[in-house]
Amino acid sequence: QQQVKQSPQSLIVQKGGISIINCAYENTAFDYFPWYQQFPGKGPALLIAIRPDVSEKKEGRFTISFNKSAKQFSLHIMDSQPGDSATYFCAASNFNKFYFGSGTKLNVKP
Amino acid sequence: GAVVSQHPSWVICKSGTSVKIECRSLDFQATTMFWYRQFPKQSLMLMATSNEGSKATYEQGVEKDKFLINHASLTLSTLTVTSAHPEDSSFYICSAHRDSFYEQYFGPGTRLTVT
Image (cartoon, rainbow over all chains, first blue to last red; front, side, top):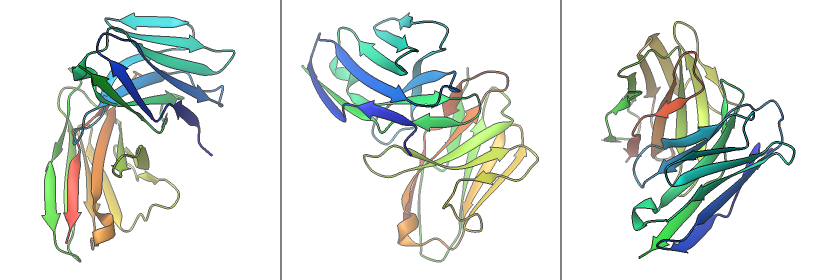
């Protein structure tokens, strides 16, 4: 059973546009929701994370929106740049064990 | 801060041999480390959870006798792929859980090719 569902599988955005990636989870015991960015041949890098006691967290051009009642959270990348082209993974955790989404390959066109 | 290293970054070995991959947390202590396997264009698959000073916990379907994990110190965990076969070729990534924090930090990965 997939604990975290992520969509879309791939995304093409023009430079300067907004990239939006969505994730949904089932287990209400999850209390930590990070997003990771991965470039080809590299390990995932922590981008931004949120706890369920807040509905939004912003760091630079990256924003997480969290809807606890709907059990959904999303990553918004404002002013998307070609350098943002990578695969993004959402995850959910109950402190020790992480469950990852299937990934979204983002391509930002110049 | 929160840097995790892996060694080697890539390795080619012959079928039937064993390969050891090291994962180190460079600037923090990690009671718990994780080992993942990632196939091309796919998500991370958790193989096992490694706890310092105790036996690793393997995920269902992962052969514990084939993928030996040792977590001898608070900064080092190793994964040994024993009697490697071509189907073991993959990208192996470790991560370290920073004690008392939620964050999990990933290493750069090790590309294993078995010929």
